[in-house]
Image (cartoon, rainbow, N blue to C red; front, side, top):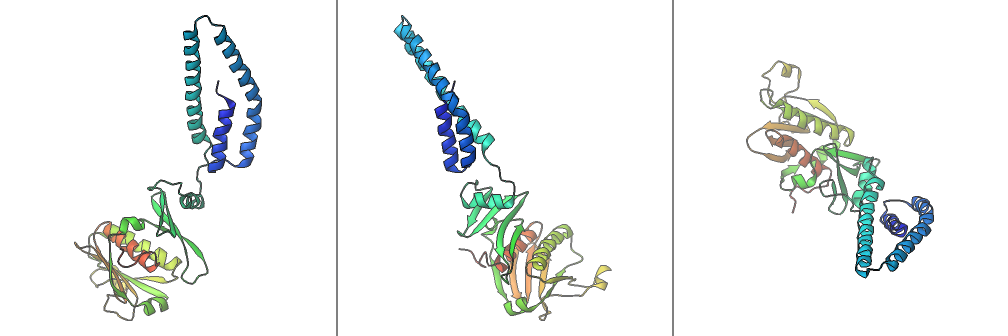
Length: 276
C-alpha cells in the first residue's frame, strides 16, 4: 500500500509545475486524506508484527521489503500520474504557450531569436506575426522553420518601394520545364502568403510563349522592371535572390519550396538576408 502522503507530495509537485490546477489538487487532497489514517494503522500493525517476531533478521528483511515496495509504488505512481493527468496541447495557442514556457522538445518547438515562437503541427511550422500594416495578428504556416534554412542566403536587393506600392504581382516560370509539381507547390505557398498577409493579387504568367496555355497569359520576365515578379526557375544550382523588381528562386525539387520559404522569412523581417 502506497503512503497517501507520498501521493499528496506528487500532487503538490504537479500543482507547482502547472500540470494540474489548484482546484484539481484540492479535490485529490480531500479524497486522499481518509487514506492517511488507514495507512498509519496498517504501518502500525506491520510494526507490531515485526516486533513480535522471534527472529530479528527476518523482521529486518520484512521491513526492507516493505520499504522497497513502497518506493517502487511511489515511482510508478509518479510516472503514471504524469502520463494520464498532464494536460495535452489541443490547439496552436496551447503549443505556443508550452513552447514559451520551455516545455516542448526541440523537435516540437523553439523560440527563434528570443522573439518568435515556432511550433510544428501536422508537418508544418507555425509562428505568429503582426501584419505589415499593424492591423492583424497572423498565424503563419510554412513548410520549413528558420533553423532548417539558416545556411541559405538571400542575395541581391529588392526594390522595396515597388514592393510596397504594388497591389499585384506576376508569377512566372518556364512552361516547358519538367518539375511542375514542385514549381506549383512553391508558387502556391508564395501566393497564399502574399495574398493573405501582404494583400497582393497574384497574376499567373509565363517566361516564354511556347505552349498553348501561355498564349492566354502575360509573358513576363525580370526585364519587366515596372512589374513586381516572382520568377521560379528550374536549375541545377540552388539560389534565392532579389533582382530589383524580381524575386527569383532557382533550383529543383524541394529546393524550390525551401527557397520560397527563405524569401518569405526575409520579407517578414524574421530572418536577415544573410544569417550570422
